[in-house]
Length: 570
Image 1 (cartoon, helix red, strand yellow):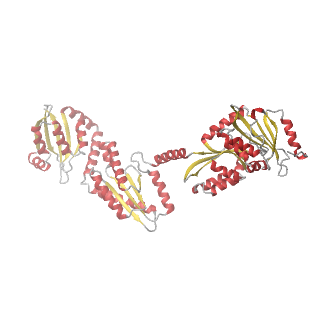
Image 2 (cartoon, rainbow, N blue to C red; image 1 turned 90 degrees about the horizontal axis):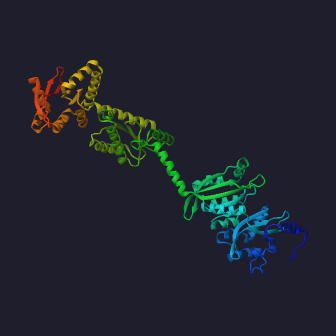
Image 3 (cartoon, one colour; image 1 turned 60 degrees about the horizontal axis):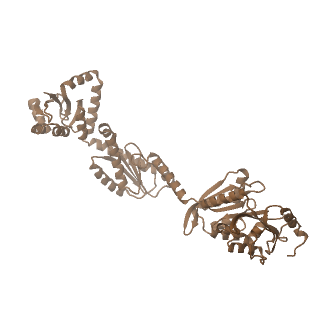
């Protein structure tokens, strides 16, 4: 080797000053031609059969080929057998390039730190540097162990000089090493990666904003906090969620702005997070009882419809008839059953439409697909199905396919529902009205002091006292034992049905004929008008004898026929 001019003085000076340090090998290297000369080579790392090799790049490649370097570190060390890679890093301005690895040393293994030290006068015209190998210190080994651990999680780790826009691959997939060899700048790598179709189209804006080198510089000039973004990247024929992070290196400074870039697969983690988030959003937008959308979601969807003006829109507005009475007489559990029955019917008949419970007993369906005729046909089926459980609804339907006014459509459907509800109560044979009047009268009676005294007095003398309007077949509460109240509830407050159920359950069979006669109201009315009082004695299955007396009250007319039924013990 014959280069002994002034240009190499700094190299010689550096080698002489370094001889006292713990170096196992030192070599002067011309990174353009690959020629080299060892200035130091310990016996510990003297590789047999390498004496005739005159090119440093061939020397390094042979070390890898001969499996002198452990396989898990071979790819990273092999990079230094590529002249283009070494020259790119040296001529970009890096002063020290370091790579640690584990290699064979005789019958044992040794942790080695490989370095390229660049003298100040190194240039294209004077491409001389120092390659050195020394035993790795404890801190380096610890750091490498940490990187190995990180590599399990991160499939790409780069060391980036954000000011110079350069990078060093610490770990990458084999397919990405081609980018590292071809491209000099990290910004070019990021751009080429996206241009090659590796980033999902919908995530390009996020990816491009995150990899904007100027924005990265600005961020880390002002803050040392890590930044990250999630995007979908191609792996094979599919796209998977990945997370890219930029973190300041421990050597980061204004003069040496080095960042570490990590990329990891977060596909399953992200999908699980999205699922949890969706469940939270869904719970927020769902009615807890029926699982239909709630009022909040209804208002949100109405606002969205206003903004985008759909081509056509229909609205079904429903009110559940009699919910208040069911809750009061049969309990809220029965009322909940009623609401759930309506909700289930909407789910069955409108599987693809937006369905809401917007109030206690009010439901709506919004559709951009179904016509007025479609919805009315479905509504008829729903009414029929609910009727099998004695549930009834009032409903209104509005549809438009021109000049869509969302508020008008919903308002019109609600108004039609209100009118339908009015018709329902007018045509309900006055049962609901009479029952409500009876309940109000009972309340007035029981609020009076003399009523309390009266009830206390008759409760010891009588087994039950009922006021019954035979035209409506509902009892008014004067003194009704708890067990008979339960029977009334089970029979939907129909007195004749409750009395028959009472006889079947508590009265001996030979007396059932008497009860059959008195619940024949047409026959009973005739007898009362002729006789004034109907009375008979019966025996219960527990052998107790009772007397039932039925009297007509004076305030009867064509619309009502009020009677009093008195059960007394013998």
